[in-house]
Every structure is written in structure tokens, then in C-alpha cells.
Image (tube, rainbow, N blue to C red):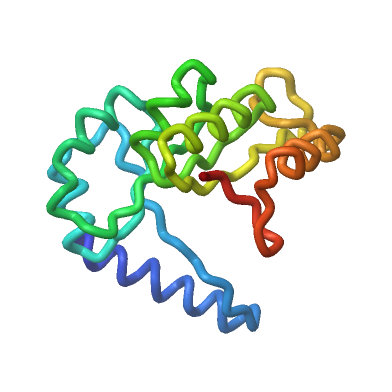
Length: 163
């Protein structure tokens, strides 16, 4: 089964699940391309995929140099982001799906403002409380919200980061 057929099947299954649940929520399919060569990203793009996920900044930096031929390709950082790599991550990606500490959040906000770049973020919450896993604890919700209010990052009920 080729990639285009697989994507059609995934979209069909999503539509069927939405019908069953009576929801019309927007669903974004993200192709995780970590460790795959650039040719897989090209094939995915030609098959209609418009969001890719990478979890290694150095690997992404090499791959992303070739994206000029793929307009509207959304680049998502997935996985744990070390705060010392926040600047490069903001430069490379359109979305960071794994903010797991106040320190990293502050750095992402700082660099997005310096670079005058809007970037979408998702907050990672460690609901199990397992120490080996990353993420905010549910008890930190006030601290997270205060950070967003302090930085004036809530727009129309959505949390955004940017200039």
C-alpha cells in the first residue's frame, strides 16, 4: 500500500469517527518523519500531508533547508525540548508540541519575540506523576496560567506565543 492510499484510509477513518461522535472538530494529521530521509517528506507532501513532526533539532535543521519547494508545510517539534535549544527550535519550527517547564516556556516566549515570529505551542502535562516522564504536574495549572497572563499570551481564549 502506497503512502497516498494510506493517507486516504486515515482520512476516511477520521471522517467515520467524526460521524459516529457527531463532532466536526478540525483534525490535523502529522506525519512523524524523524530518522526518515528527506525523500519520505517529499513523498508525504506530494500525497497531501501538510504537517510533519520532528524531535531532533539538529536533524531537522539539515532536512529543513530543502523545504522551499513545499509551501504551506507545517513543521512541528514533538518530544522533549531542552531549554538550551529553544532559540533554534523557534527559528526552525512553526509549532512546539511539548512545552514541559516554565523555564522552557519563558525561553520560547523570549525568542519568539526577538525573532518576531508567532509560534503555536502545546503544554505537556504529566498526569501520571511519574518522575521519569516530562511535563507539568496537574497541580501547576495556576503557575502555567499566571505565566500566560503575565506575558499577555492569551488571545481570544487561545494561548499564543509571538510578537
